[in-house]
Length: 557
Image (cartoon, rainbow, N blue to C red; front, side):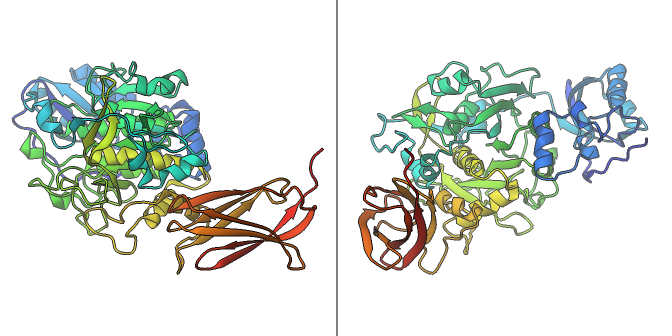
């Protein structure tokens, strides 16, 4: 059967000249004809979890999912090219060669659509130059004392300012969610104590290095270690991550010693790998604007959602049911100033940075996208964010590299509370919960998300009313010895709970105070003398009253 590949072909062909050995190139093929694979047998090239994700959200298997034709790869190898990372979504491969004549021969092959330069060989950029703004890390003081039920330590504020503790206190810690972390390296992740429970539980599901090939060696670079700690750390009283019970794939796509467009190709390969192994989410604290080879630089006009390979890949990942979270970038006080790829993708969640008071960070990259869409989408604390370093010590650092995983982990917890919803509905709820949803700007987009409010929204309850209050639910109903009431409050206030008989006699009175400016959970006791039967529960606030019919059942012997 003849397979005609339907993918978006990039129009821009980059120059092939001035490549120094060994050069790397992006080779795109014309088709997937004569492939041994079929969309009717996805188990041959997708994991069970990847297939289940598609089935859950009614996503069809398409020709994009079928691997690159191996016969085409073999042809390039036989000519002398070293084939690096293939891309099934773009029907392409990255190759390496020191022979300029080989490029001409490959370009003349009938099944080759185009070739683009990926990078030169000289790696001239210093590590500290590349990550200077995104990794401005300072030593932390002693562990904090502001704790909650989870004993957050230093991370209490960064999670609390987004009402992430509301999700955590209800048991949503990311369990069952698989997050693929695309980054520059994960130094010492396999030994530092912040990840003890992650390792002991077997929740590092796998690693992959798309820069050098093979698995991650845990010695490449520490940026990913810090990023991972913001989500996965579990040090009670010191540092608790935003998704401490999620599972993770660690994927290296970034070469910290250089900045060439091949890293976008690595990002594509990493996203495809995340899809194939069945990841639910991608966290990427990476972005692409200009490169060491100026001929491949992006312009701001490229940030239109349809130009960069990384951007297109991010949207393809979203179309496969993956929820992608990406840092907005740290170019706000640099000449570039604006967001980079893949932040401009329209189906992902882009995260800017604020300080502990909610003031936009000077470095957070500006939106909108080149075609005028709101970017970034939301923001989190990216100034003096608590992280774990590769030496096991705790630090505070600056950058959207840190605000993105903070939000990503909480999105995972939110999604855990309602797995039936597709990614775009989760993203929409996060946006709608944010502090300036009705007046977004170019620095933090829709503002700081409120994950307590977002949980209401995905349950079909809209707490955004005239008085900004919402009565959520009462359970169990029928009840025996206690009732639990969930209530959304925008401020600290006293709330009165009363139980009435059907005849209107008040039988129980109790006053409690809201603990959070978000979702609160109250437990009402002292029903020992209440006979089995039907009653009215009345909840009184300073603004209004709520009445719910409740039933006390016979006690279980």
